[in-house]
Image (cartoon, rainbow, N blue to C red):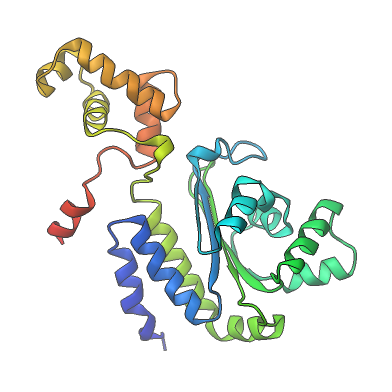
Length: 261
């Protein structure tokens, strides 16, 4: 029989109008299981062995600011064996295999050093979910860090009992987040810049857009230039494509979405 107690939570996550809302609901559930520290990352711009421009990736965490700076901004995540696993797998795993590989000397020197640094910070047990992606350059994963004092054995027991629940909540959170606007100070568009890009995406010329927006062609060009700069691209066509990938155009504002529901 399916467990129906998780269904209301999944529905609330799916109905979230903002990334923060979906994140708070999911991490609240994980915290109740003993995973108060959670890291999430998603990019649509994977290239070979890199995540692309970090400003285009989405990083979320419930960890303290110092750890976040070190883990994400310092690139520590890319040195961990679980990052390597997430790059080439889709699914869910506990961290027991990392402890076993570390004890047996099967990790690379860089990975072994990352494990030692985590142990020094009390990070020894957890669960990682690597999400299946349809787009070739997209990749997302989430790491649930067991609370201080929680053993690998406890995590294995929780995993055996709640595996499908954990996976369902993580997947729903991820699927909701990737369809919501990815807002960031590095990639912010003004309402007029978004409107200009949307009209261009509809096939309108600069003259058409000027008439539709009630401004001069020169002002349209200015909006498009600023949009290109905000999105760090060279052409307007690239700006339209990137804006669409980041869900920054053709999106209703959160207030409008709430009113519609």
